[in-house]
Length: 507
Image 1 (cartoon, rainbow, N blue to C red):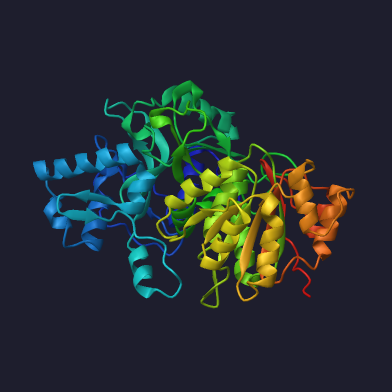
Image 2: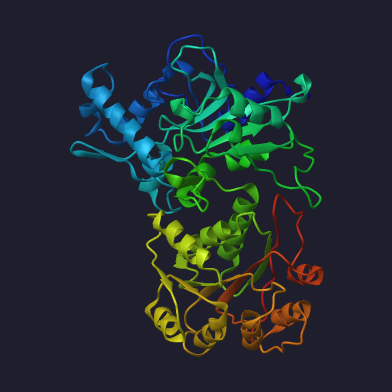
């Protein structure tokens, strides 16, 4: 069957995948209670008539969520009436989103009067039936042709995705039949979407997507002509773009995999964040809003899945190019390894990050603070005594330097055989010389004359790679032979290439 790839056809295709319904815009009326669909990825159709342009939210969905999940507090807000009480609450909610961003508001809710209002029910653990029921009460909705502007103009976005009435993603879709591509969608965002409009202000939405049949790009902060769009592509043949898809469009991984209900919830809880700008040129508050690129999301998820399946005692080499967000990938991996379980037991007692970069230390600290579901503390080991003490105390995430790597191995080998560790090594196998490389070589029982390739190959068979530890080595410059030894090389995407390692040999 031929796929309709006109803009309207692409809208309907995405909606059908997400909701099981084409979500054709109704002429009038409200959706109210979205119909539950058996198909799709857990979303429901929305209605552009329910959108409150002044406060940038779907009032019907917000009201329904609050009445369902917090029936003791919702009536006091009087959301069914056009009255001062409702206006006061909506103004409060809008102010909190403007101040803290929609990510923070969804995670932690808002305080209004005597009530603390939850605006999102988090991802449940597999055995928590109550939490699973509450998660199902979230209202994930898709609205087509959303007219967003207060000036009553006819400007409309192709798609907007809402969670409990709060907008989180906008989409501009293009197609080859009209000789337009994602680049035209980017130009439309830069030229026609006024960043002063409330919906496009910093922190109001999580990401804005420019999509065609072949490629996906996104932006987290619209700033007119200087809006920065990054690729969200899988990579193909060692370069950019996406591989051919015999079952559909090249970009359908976006709506089939990334945007399914559970995936979006996990990204909002464990990846998306507002962070201080490193350059100071990010705009409002000198902050940047972070949404993971595809290669970052994919590599962290696959590493977590492999650890969940096989437990501790594995080794991994991750090729992650400089400038492609390696620091965030390491931080996201570190904090998500802590709560990881196998057979109802934690897989790792502690995560040790080995690096010589102070910026990574601070970035991990800043990242961890944003995730309430991880009750981990981050400790920086300045010396060998600090390192031993933090390991003995059971600190969840410990950051140390490459020079301390011998003490890490000694402590784990001699005193901590009954505990399990994840060791993340930043630039562990780079070709740079100096004291750091010498310390790593000494720790692995190698000589400085060995080449980087020899060092890695010896590392694979070294008895010093302990069975109660998994090793995650991030680098931008692995040797081809090293990639072959560690696992099956994957096509390089927009900045990352990785190989899932084989199980280490045990003593």
